[in-house]
Length: 170
Image 1 (tube, rainbow, N blue to C red):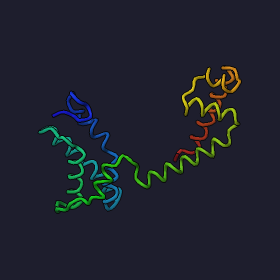
Image 2: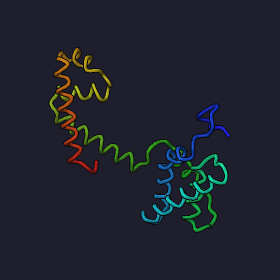
Image 3: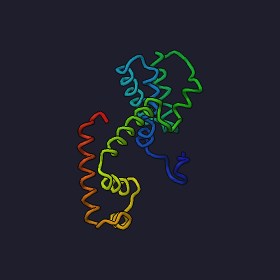
Image 4: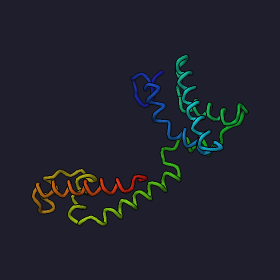
């Protein structure tokens, strides 16, 4: 059995495939579980059963198997089919609405932080970390020495670290 994402190679190890699938599985369980404690238990039990099953026979789609196990645990063994919306949510690489809101809030908080930085320091940070420009490129573009670029970058990172330390929930 070959992995379609890795032509000509054996399937990715189970732990790799499970790791890449934990987000959708957790979101599904959290959405349908009665409370967070039950959700955590069901998630752990689902993963455990996937690992146990994989010991006896190869699983082509461990996420699908984990979802089926979770669904059965949630329903207490009753038969029920997943809705198309639920299946779309599981296969979607996009974050759920709560995650998008949280990401938006973090982005706004970071924008506010960047606005408080001195202009040159902010420009150096953006050019170096977001655009990937070298010190030499930044120095030439901004009319600074490479040493000045290095100092601006050091100070910007120190400012950023203080900001993150003060916003641990970030």
